[in-house]
Length: 544
Ligand code: HEM
Image (cartoon, rainbow, N blue to C red; front, side, top):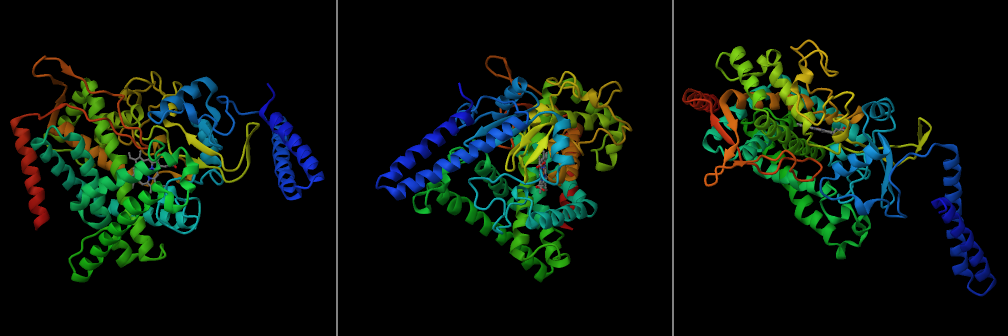
């Protein structure tokens, strides 16, 4: 078989020859077009040939013309296929999907070299096909995490970062404390709904921080899921068969649905939330929120109320499904590793002497932090990682990486690197607690921490919500271990154990476990009473 560039060159030369022949005849215009096309093909293939002979080719699965490997990348559990290829082709391999080059990385040091050390040129985002102007190239200013590396991204990231860290210090610990107590109380009433209650807690916290409107949490969760669906490979077909997106609007059902069913209503709703805050400020009844921070204190970073409403709305969406993942997976890992759940409970009992843990207890609860961190490693809820895009041609270890290549830090594989995580497929919180494991770090009052962990991203685009996540997951999981015993359920008729699968989830970019059944009961009558009391106290304090 000839290499692909040879075949292209051959076709190019034949086309030019044929075109000259036609030109000799009477079809001069068609012939000119054909000559142009043939020349382009020729030049491209010559360039490609020059590159191939100068640089070491990047390994990867054999590519079919035009489609690449789109045909055998499953829409479900795609990270498993990416990992399979990485086991076969190595920690850095190249594949392509309908002409888009995808460089898949599964070694932390390579990701560090490219996305961190060369972050200056590796911090752009790939365009999301089924959103309009996802990168904000044309100034839509709507999707902070998806924006290209441009002025809108720089100023929104700065503003959002500041808003989150300001609220960390000031009021959000109170918000978390309140919402965790509410969630624990609700769990005593609805023990079969832990997944809903945990996700709703995350959404209520975000809606309070964004607009001081926890009551809109359910709609916020639905919106987060809709947006996620829109950008995930298993979402609209236009994310895979990308040319379909370019059909004219009037015959394009995907563009119409995106505009009329998702984008415009969400935009109107978020603007309404923002205007409600304005109204409350005017009446003197507003409480702290990110929207109020913009309206009252810091308008310097953003261009307009419209931009602020989008930025705040985006933050409200960002913290729901992301944080909901580890909260739910904590239950999954604990039910399968009851010895570790027991250890968390014993640690909390010893340190907190019967009361619910608070953030101030965190330095003295390393086992709880280790179980949370190991949960995020063992079941990362963004298993494919979030893609970056390289902005200039680059050469790495003798390999040529052309501008526009998408870079995928494949977390599912990175977090299973045996050199860093021995016995990586199994759940071992002790890897963060006992000297001798590569990931052990002291002092245990500070480590383990999820800050700096790879599932929160790389370089200039790292997650700005990791601190908030750490506190929220610590409070939520600590509260459950303090208040409840968990275990498998048994079928009433057959007596058989009902399994809680560890490997069943959706396949969106951010995943969560499929609906599971589990027994979650207060640890004792006294504990149930304590949970009720705490909640009523929190409610009373809120009313005052
Ligand atoms: C378990 C929880 C979370 C996980 C696993 C997570 C993970 C990530 C990842 C992987 C990225 C992309 C990093 C990269 O491109 O290298 C990211 C970006 C981002 N995250 Fe998070 N995140 C979480 C929670 C949150 C929360 C609670 C917020 C906000 C309130 C948040 C706000 C953001 C924002 C605004 C970005 C975009 C940063 C940028 O593009 O410059 N995240 N997150």
